[in-house]
Length: 213
Length: 213
DNA sequence: TGATGTGAAGCGGTTCACAGCC
DNA sequence: GGCTGTGAACCGCTTCACATCA
Image (cartoon, rainbow over all chains, first blue to last red; front, side, top):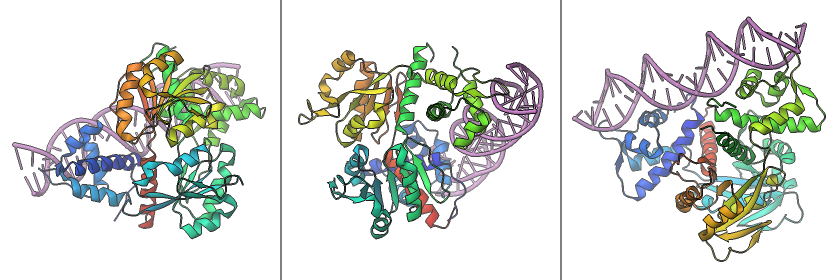
């Protein structure tokens, strides 16, 4: 299989398509056209076809796409035919909430460890998950064969944590700390910045108040 | 003040600039050039100047930008010179975590109400915040003058909640439910989709495993 | 001189429009 | 005939390069 450079926007859309196809499959829909599917997202149908074209040809001209087949193809493309072992660093409010988050239960991501430095939290159980001492991070990552790390520590600690993650060989990180992290070319880092999202909403409100549309 | 269409990417960067300027200000830095500031983000300095150019001219040729002034300008541009009153719908793990999230404490966003439909949660206090019956949503929004709503309910309930929000006159919404919501032209809706983020990481891992870079 | 502010060029992702195939 | 797959046009954001001004 050959992958030219694929826009991240495209793979994000694949996630959405997949979610939709799962629903369609459950409703017993057999076939769908790009037009019909794209309409559900207010996307252009050509965009949908181009997104798929990065990976192959999955449709039938004159007919459309077989829901079940396409679902399986996208599942494979996204690498969701295996389960990923995830750890969360930081057992504060956010880390604990993520550990208990029901949305993960039915997905291919299983939270297998929490880490913290707070003696009061270490050895506790949160959700179905044990809190380990962050001092043992390298050891536990190896034992538990962790694939993905989630950073849920205060901004001031995040870079330190990322350095430790890099040492462990983990290659994919989701960061919730509102801070700029030094990019590491071996690691795929995604940051979810709640403050920025909220500030964006504030900007929108401020702007519309000034009589702009 | 006149606002041409401003890329959302630009206003997101303004948030980052502001965070950095706050730090610089605290460190006592008086002046900074676009080059120097952009370097901290691995951005092009022209991008920084263009981002500002949407809103005016804030620098001095040959010198750069006064940290304190620029900080104040961006604060005003983003509408962060006032405090926003935020509510969270859904007092589950995520909603509760957000209500207790310390990062908001020092920002211009104050969580003033939680909502749920679960009798076991209603009237409880989470963080410093009371859980109201979602049946009373319209009433409480009016009384508490809520500006921003955060949706932290299961996907199946999210559209219903958004409809209720629309009725209340709230204009800005941050959604954590992993589902497609019908766009409402009166409402600025931002969705944070954790599943999609994780699936994106899965795709990255699957791809690199197949020997691609 | 030195850094800003900005028109023009560059680039990457989206849409168009149609050839190709069932 | 109908829908996919795709080259070409399009569009908007980023980068370049330089005129402008303290």
